[in-house]
Image (cartoon, rainbow, N blue to C red; front, side):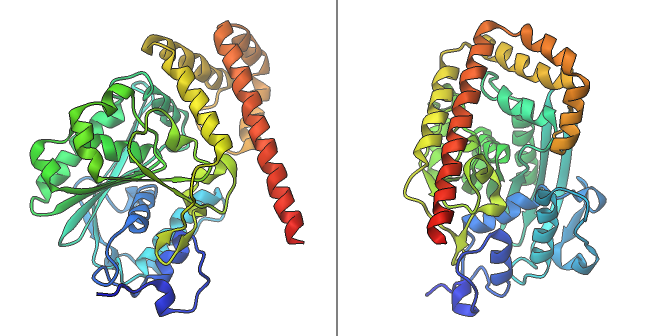
Length: 382
């Protein structure tokens, strides 16, 4: 059977983002164009939406039961949050997703255990998609990310396995797909690797959208190698997060409207004919930057890694930053606590200060080079 594409059905520009694609695919069924990595990103990003007012662990809701007209895009919030609302409104208007239900929304964050976990299940009559949210805007969420480099298992990973098992038990006849963006992609892989044998047989695909890797010993385990055949990983051209730590599984490099580190934003990824626009390889500058960080981390023991990152996050504690708000708000907090911050920096270990200095200089050098390249491209277009 020939598969239909958005361009077969309507006259639209070929390069779109994920929201444009949902609108273009609204009348294309899964029978005509099967579930793929773009659909996975849709569900992964919907996990970022604040479902607290509609869902909890004991309720389920069908997309067709939600009145999209009543959902308004907030005016006073960051663009990435506005995009979550825009994506949801597009999904609610789509016949492609209308038969899906949502259930088992869980949002659990604990500053004391350095845990940030959020997940939701999307299901129809055939399969259940377990979507894990990535890192949110809180410092505790980012702290748990770096804990991945020295802890055998972070709290969110433990919770992800429990959550997957509960979903599998609740929907015993469904095939299972796991997925997520950023740390959510890491959790999608981890939960599938650590699941019970019965659940593993029901998992058909594992989607990781620019999620960080794992410690080397985890990647060398038999259970990871067995699950790796089902992993489908996508990373943008200038990926940083997705290339952290060990990434032995093959990945697809995709194009983005954004530049440098901002390519981690999935709303900037380019989509054409309901597929991500491919790139032949990673950006060499960022690839070598990732490699140098990974090599340095590999030279440290788990205890040294923990000490290093604890020192880094002491900066945020000293500055009174608990959430990554606007630049203006965070700058105000830094200026307010400047004396404390300076004192804290002076107390950092010499190795930490040296590495931070080198890393920041390298980062600024790459950003400067990328900006020059982009300026040159703009001049060539004129």
